[in-house]
Length: 512
Ligand SMILES: O=C(O)CCC(=O)C(=O)O
Ligand SMILES: [Fe+2]
Image (cartoon, rainbow, N blue to C red):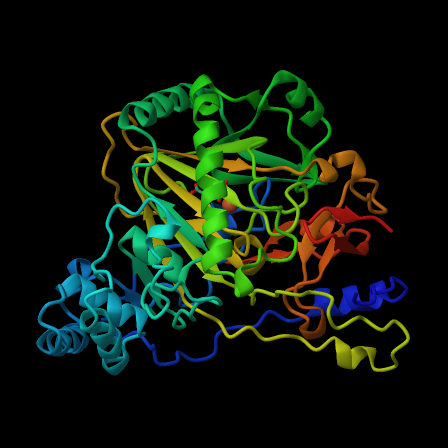
């Protein structure tokens, strides 16, 4: 077992960590996926105004230049970029002449999977066509389960094996994943369209829409400052008893939520279905994706994921959005899985990786008496990556898997225009179903010197402590706007409390 870090140098470490300068993208590297670059997007993104912090999130600005060189699916390409378009078309034509039995969409997916390398795509195509036993590579458009992405009986099928870790996304690019089957090959997520019957989905949507008028714009009193998010939301739990526990107990970004509601009837009805689907996906992922077919350290034991609570979000119109964030782990614990149901207007969900997936944190113990402490605390420069875009249609379930919150951030992108939905008009409803841990009830969580419950976070910037979990002060979690209003920054201050967080194999806390 690895040696536990001692706390007697925590301030030093925390100061070094907090002071670590933000790494900025320097120059655009050549993309491995040679898709046509779209003209710079006109969307004005002003996170200082439009994406303030909200209740369970750390929100930040999109990376500089992140809208440049957007990778679009062929039908959305900007035809002013003909040359590059030709290069993709040329590659597809070449592949098509080499593999005439494969459809253009299959070849496109092969090219994507191979990061634009014709040679690699061709090898994959050959491996698909040479053996009569091998399944078709055609894109599965109505994917419902991870196991159907994979072909366990055919271990030579390299195309269908979801890579772990996932391949890098070229810097400054937005890779549009146009079919659900592409999602797990690039994102720590799976997408399940037509997840409920049409009738149930519409009923749920109508029920949610009737809740929306009483929703609050998410606003938090965070010590001396109020912040709000450009969409509305409410928090739901199973029953009134649980709602009572939540009021004045659970804290999000420095404030208590008082609007705690109980699940609507259709939410209650669909919970068993969600739990089954999520647990099945987790099992398939353990078997087919994670190293040695073992659950990742700290994940709940197989079959144990269950719904305790949910946030319901409403995005009314194209401009309502939520900025880059990862969901706060405080009550969910490490390696949490979140089930996100989308209803009404289709909107764009974006993901971007901000840190590596650390399989074994604490393996290199922090030596408190080590004179070379400074050496230990080298800042880690994550090679800035591009982002992924996934369109979330009405009646779809997106599962954010266990490695998502610690290593990735997500956002709901503002749109230029939207396709109105027959029931919801311009609104999109999203419900994120969550599994809070009994072992992380508010009364069990350490309090910082400010007297309020801590937040659970991971180290993402310090090389030798990458992936370590810590309890920190809520004030360090607060954000302030910059003078020019273009960028949010973490506010320094608070009591600077830091305590390393330790968990057993199943992610329940071990208190010192
Ligand atoms: O609306 C969505 O799809 C995402 C919502 C979200 O990220 C959240 O509730 O934390
Ligand atoms: Fe989120």
